[in-house]
Length: 334
Ligand SMILES: NC(=O)c1ccc[n+]([C@@H]2O[C@H](COP(=O)([O-])OP(=O)(O)OC[C@H]3O[C@@H](n4cnc5c(N)ncnc54)[C@H](O)[C@@H]3O)[C@@H](O)[C@H]2O)c1
Image 1: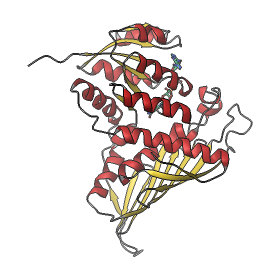
Image 2: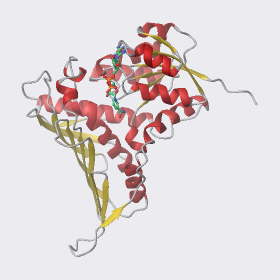
Image 3: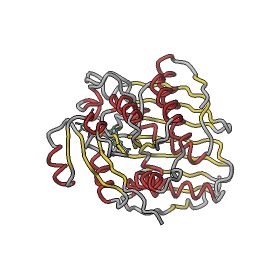
Image 4: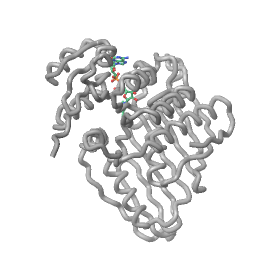
């Protein structure tokens, strides 16, 4: 059998991207060739990773040997870096959000559909044991037909808006930066896409700071299958970082809060609530990138999420931001 080609890779942005680099380094199907950052920690990280380094993204683009680029730079650089990688026919794994506005969205979508490159994004929560448990309960039909779903992305890291790059770049959306994970989970468990949204927001928590946009956005979502949804992107929450979810079905209800998952199968207040257990292991963040690598190596489709789903969650965020701005319900097609 012909030996498969090892994938040569590079990473841009070594914050969360340092995890990308460690995953690439530990995957036998990949060579980590180089890492790129503007920060002075670059050399230290490259030494630890035993790879080359550069502070110029163009060096990655010029290197014809590099097949895969993973992007974890600031959100305002994502669009340009994706476009440049597509031009150079490099596979792309990009942090969310892969773009910031409608024009960028359509440009990327058209180019991805007309080029033979693999493209995915880092929806790490799909592999979190708590969401895998929720998905398994739903697939076993334990809660019947779902009619309403709610999810909160309680960020608990306000200083990243008020002191970090998120408050300095020209535009930052808490829905694109946080709520997108919850929207993706909803699309995944409902197997249905959003078709209409309405959003309101405020900025009590970041008032008088550099951050100019709403830090708290709540959105209502109408799904194509008739299910109603509500997503909270709550970046000022006085809580640790947490994801909460309430899923209401005709036979039962699931409530996820503070890493506890409760299952209600009755309306009787005296009936004992069932607490569901799931693994507390923290290695779930590696799986989506490793699956992406495997899809390139074995020339197969990505297992964990489809291209349609990647574009659907992004488009929903863009519609939510439009609704917030125009104070109107926004209908859209994916
Ligand atoms: N999937 C997830 O769960 C998850 C978690 C955290 C962050 N993220 C995403 O990762 C991206 C980065 O966020 P972060 O929290 O790691 O930020 P960070 O500030 O911790 O790290 C970003 C790094 O990228 C570098 N950088 C930025 N723009 C660059 C450019 N054009 N060229 C070279 N280097 C550049 C910065 O110098 C910095 O070192 C964001 O898009 C964010 O949404 C995703």
